[in-house]
Image 1 (cartoon, rainbow over the protein chains, first blue to last red):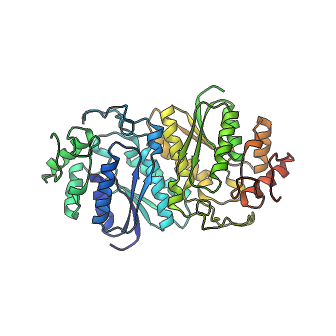
Image 2 (cartoon, one colour):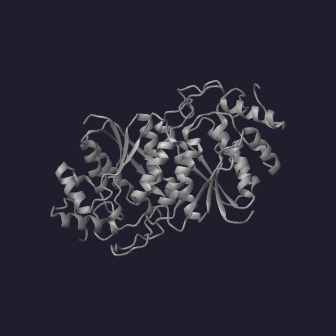
Image 3 (spheres, rainbow over the protein chains, first blue to last red):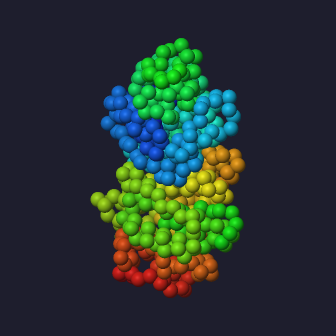
Length: 224
Length: 224
């Protein structure tokens, strides 16, 4: 993998891993993972390391953004709030929303990109997966990209790239399968760290995606 | 101090302290300080606590963003790079620039503001102080404000407010004097934590400002 450097925000989940596969087609990928006090932090970190090894990434960085957990406001980082049962028909913003999380992750990614001389920052956000997070929408990434252009060195020219933003989850699975994405190394569950629960929003979306794509999901579930 | 809540980014320096005085005129101020591995972290934190006590702020938060130091790229966070002697005629971006620092600070501030239900985030950036940081310009804050509008809950409506952005440093000193800003509690030096050096960019700008305003600077300097 050669070419210009792309920083890829890699949670260790399905979408970010396929995003890394897309970026790696024509970039050297610099892989960034953030811990922010999320419940499944340890399991996600394990996926990150294994995926980074898969991509043979020399440039990899794990950052502590656990101030997001200190600020609070989300069931994803606050053990006193329950992660709700998944309900894909719900239209409001669920309590797993971490306020302005993606801006914090992208800001750190852009700082690193500027130091590395990277040409782009890839993030695997998906607008139409029904989760309703305001900072997962293309309108946010477009606006943030303009803030990056205005707030970095003129010669930096760092683009924010969201290659899967308008894909369905099934399309993401198909794309990943075509590119050889190591699905077996990824982790999506919001609740567990041993076996995916199969019931939270994130598990439901993943299961539905593999089913629609007609591709077997290589990971195990407690209940599916 | 009552009214809507304003999150104020408070480094402990002159500009942010005057910004807090401005915000406190018609807001309850929620004071945010970030440690990011800057050389004078301990001294800045002391100023923050003293200024927060001055404003009698119940809502105060110190966050660890020292991943900025880990990412590197600045003499302000990297002990192997010297902070240059000040030269106010220089036009390039100095090596004290921490890549995209203000986006990281503002992102954390907006996350907190959304949890608190605050109406605004105040930051004491100054465009025309000659430092040349791209993320200190109004064009950046305007663009970032649009990213905030796009990336937070629709009901949040958090504004980014930069009340001193187009003031000269002397005007900031005059404004602070009018509002009773506790200048004696503030810290500006980039280099030292005991007595301000009087020679770095930040000290030179501060000294010039007080001189132009015709108001005595209550802090001591090693060399002025």
